[in-house]
Length: 92
Image: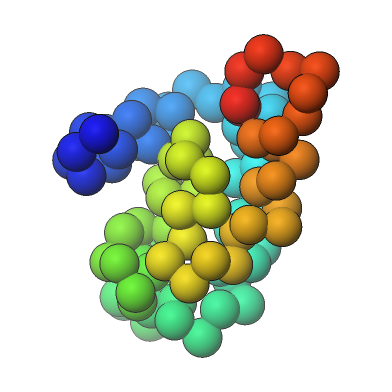
C-alpha cells in the first residue's frame, strides 16, 4: 500500500470514525501529546501539531488503520488489543 493511499485512508477514517476508531485515536493522541518529537507549527495559536519524525498531522495520523504506525513504535501496546482481538473479525 503506497504512503499516499495510507494518508488518504487515515483522513477518510478521521472524517467519520466508528466508536472503536475514535477510542483508539484518543489513546494514540494521548501518547503523541507527551512525545518529545511532537512539533507545534504555530505556537501562539497552538494549532498545526505534527509528528516530528514523519511530518504527519497528529490529528489525522492517529486514525490510521495500521498497527503501530508510530515511527518510534510507541503505539504498539495500546494498538495490540484493537488489532489482535480474536473475537473481532475487523481490526478496527
